[in-house]
Image (cartoon, rainbow, N blue to C red):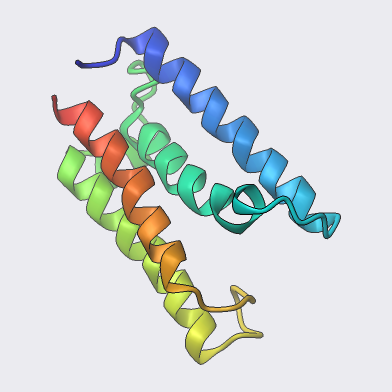
Length: 123
């Protein structure tokens, strides 16, 4: 079942709100189990997919839509690969540009979030 523009818009704002909540909890060093462990990893790539494809607002036709979001497969691949690259950088450079602890389950969360949006977009 494909989502309507209103459905994509609701998903866009819901994902953004969850991501901001996860970031706020993390910044306050509040551990909330799976939410703080994987919530941002699940929601941010999915939100980026919707934004890059302009699914929430098809009238928005900026350079990101024309390049990254030109096709569903391009958007999914670039967002997943970019997210995965940040995670792998944590393995080799834990105090680097994307400081943190490498967790292969983060990569799984990127795949799930991006994959769900890709599946909904291509149905």
